[in-house]
Image (cartoon, rainbow, N blue to C red; front, side, top):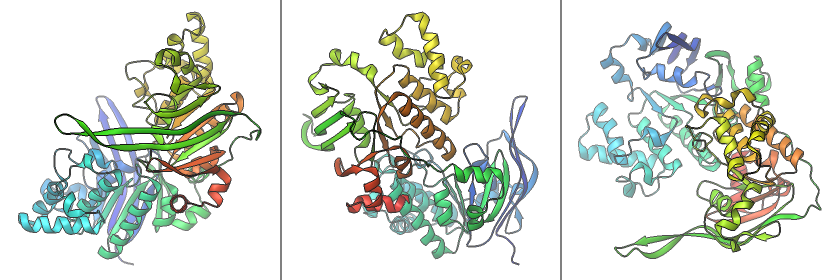
Length: 528
């Protein structure tokens, strides 16, 4: 049998913080052969990225390796000098980092960032580097590559930024590519394109890929073997198919069982229409020149109409930039719009801000990023109580009881209410955001991608919670997401959006089984 390209043997990683030592990885072992794809799977905090960063010695000074070694073609990378490891980094082993927006330099053009890799490792001239950069951008299928050379990261979409990261990682034709959650922040169709691209490039360069992810759907279709990691330990390694069909370890079974499942809450078909919009438009002006004249409009939402019945869930589906979140914000009158917004028997677009304030307690929103939407300076108790204080709903003495009750409802210990948001996990923070919305006893809830940043098992828990709350209080949901598996598990009806327009609407079952629009068909193919 041939020697593995990469061999991680009994690796342990500790982080020292003052007197405290955190054992992030414990006795992890894995092998990766030439041309093979190994998926390292596990939830946030399991030690996946720490293991990957150890390979290229990218961990901070507070990290140490009390045990183990990492052999790349027989060379122990942990014993290499700084100069030797620089030769390996980016040259023999490339890496795609998890968040392209924060791992690309916002001050440098795309050309400059890719060229830097070529100058350092291949000593190319400026002209040669430009030609090779153009070749790489075309290889990763960036449209109008020549025009994009001078672009900065913020001028590119998420999918384009991820392609630039891939181009940089492959600039020196590495033997091993480490892809750390390369598709987490991407829409399903863009995910499919990026993964297809990686597969083509792998065949072209005959390179091995260490794919780090928590998305089991990706693993099943793109990995030859799987290593499952939890709490710093690799608990199961096997060929892909046996892991899915006959998982051995209890944690692997738990991971596989946590894919979004179940059905939407049973509802009455004769329920009255509770929220409806007609011909809703949100146009943002494009202003140019010294006098800032309006030359055109970005039509974020362009003539959308929809109805949601009392106690029903409507799923709004589409890729980034399709107008989903803008639609949700306009519906709650958080941004200006034209058209009719009927909430119960009131047309919201005829009311001024003073008239709409008393209605706000009946319609609440849970935002996409639970960390960004909770104030870091307020305790959980203050965050949840804020709505009660603004609407003067209760005597101050009763606030405590309300807060304790709502925290119990969302599955949080009431004793935790004196803590701050940074002391909680992503899933717990999202529960706090839901508690903040529910404490006012709303009848309508807009949920803007509330599970996109969460692990699958935490997503399942939040979905279960939302279904229970909907059943208990007959809540009406507008659920915005690009994850069709979650929409399938929660929503009764679906509206599919593309470029600000609704391209398809109808009962969820019909659309998921027999989509009529080619765009919906492409979304479903990518998701399932």
